[in-house]
Length: 464
Image (tube, rainbow, N blue to C red; front, side):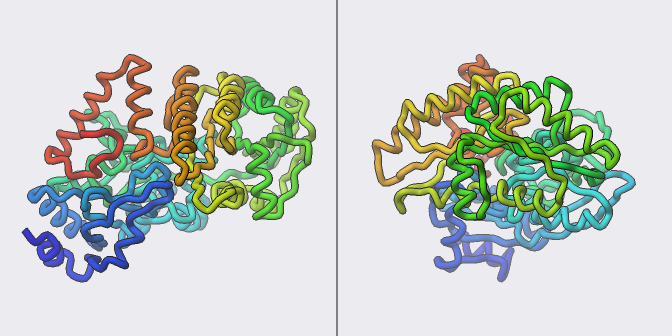
């Protein structure tokens, strides 16, 4: 059957078929490159999405939904002559209800644009991935994105009240609702968060919003060992302090930010902590001092406190741009930056960080270790020469051992980047090592109920 002709009948000019225009959709923010898609659908109504899905299900045409293309594990790239369905035209903020603490938005709304709009009401949407300038609401829901503010507010799953979803057979359903409490059967909304587009296509989201913080300040602390960083955060949280943001950077990351952003750091510091405290205007000074005293127990090279908004914004944007800054540290043009993403309980951070550094040395790799340390999230940005097979074998071995560190310390192989292509084997390893192999079978069964013909994002998360 001529799929292009039939899809053109449904979509009209909202179907891209020219090779040159399809090429950008072969990649996302990961180091993977997919296949050239059959076509790219850019629907502008839910009815078009429904009609496309009904046709694809009936004719076994595989599809992959796409938001901002910021996925880091290859979850949004096309494979096997797939149809890409871009939600770029679903970019409206439909309703904002501060009194009820929710907003209704379409999946193509960029996170930064949403927060810029919510500021008019004195509110914000807490999920805050580093790619928020391009990441969309739908994409962040599909991967259960976290980000810098997850320390205080948790990940996306904590902020989604309801969804409108087009199923693989074209039917439209609504899950959840507009209220903060709901006990009405199975929680399908939570099931869809983090599903990476394997169960359907999100066309609308009801998200919780929160009042902007009244006052905040920042502590910068520099240390000469990674264990001290882990111990400082563990003790800080143990004393009942929950930072708004808690980030750590290693020397490689600091150097990249010096080169690309002009920031200066103490020469003797191997690691840096960025701690933001949110409070009232009356108490922010005292709470910053209390937190600084705890950090000083672990013999930092230096600490400093600021409440200057311009200075805080400068460092905040630099941290969010760390991934792109790290690209400046590549030694060859064939190098890519592969991002590891594990999580462990805060109490396990000192040992997990130490073991991570040891694995870097074992495999003789260049790896920048940094991350959202308050919630135990460690990123390992690995410089991987994709043209060197031996080097890539060492990268894969490190990824395996890095993931095992998370599992052995009671954590997970994926904190906030999802599974996609990159972590399918690591997810299986986690299930096996934790005696949960049957959980994988349950997941596959759920996927089959939603998508009996297996057209949704084939090859991602696990093999069907």
